[in-house]
Image 1: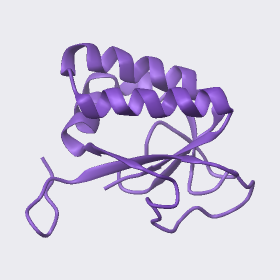
Image 2: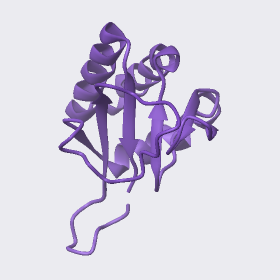
Image 3: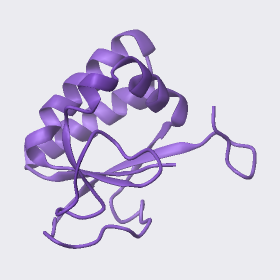
Length: 126
């Protein structure tokens, strides 16, 4: 487990980008702007460890749409485009079937909302 400087557990933040801009750097930590929800690092680490191959098959962007990535940047900003959200949601649902996390359940709702609105999801790593 990773702890922050104040001794609390590290958290990942996920939110919906209302108006995505191509070629814009999303490098400023603004969880309030995207109405982010927090997920404990423990759960993200478990997902990475158990589902690494599936997670890294998901097309994402790192900070800007021209930097194509795979999976989540644990310590940076990841943008998950609408076309990848179904695959990401399916993975989180699968992981939560054994983790039984309320935080992951809320994440599933946020992903579903983004899918319904055809919007990008932003992830701020630890």
